[in-house]
Length: 246
Ligand SMILES: [Zn+2]
Ligand SMILES: [Zn+2]
Image 1 (cartoon, protein in one colour):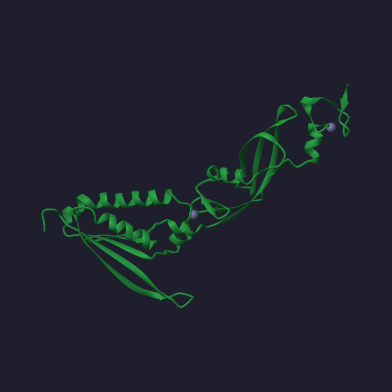
Image 2 (tube, rainbow, N blue to C red):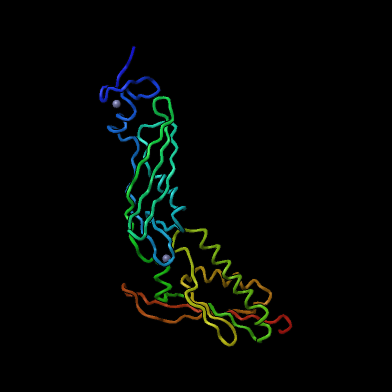
């Protein structure tokens, strides 16, 4: 017996119908996929983006998190792809979801577009760097110039690698560390850093080097916080020695 879609009159059979409606009519009346609101903050300085509470390095990295929030209501064997259509000149940002799913007994493609509410801002890291915010100074000091020329670059490189590894592992800004400023001194280098705890871990790590002689910690009172707590800045000064000296 011939069957018809009660809404549009199209011929239907098992392959092109759901619940006795043609697929197109059924899709119009039923929300099968629920796309979340897309509120995204974009750092104009480093291009990182925040979705929810987390900062991501780029739009590619945020896809998974967005897709996790897509609700599939009444579909089977669904596969979703997401592409972004971003136009920074006209300030128009869209997310295009390509949903492939088993409808009737065929794989059908459903395209859904959602506007992205994109807010341009500066992330905490960038505002700290531009505001020259730091909590800790790490001083590297060398007893003689020749020795300094041989090892200082290596030690700076090592610190850079440690910092990169730490920052790559986390999306939490409070668990990251940055060199806000680097100042060359006659007998070494001063690094201005924005995380005391990690700075201390770096100091402990550097002290494992044979050429590390000792380190000293000092604190400077820099002010009082809003809730009346004294705010200190910590300086770690590491002395390195030529292995020939004692
Ligand atoms: Zn129909
Ligand atoms: Zn930034």
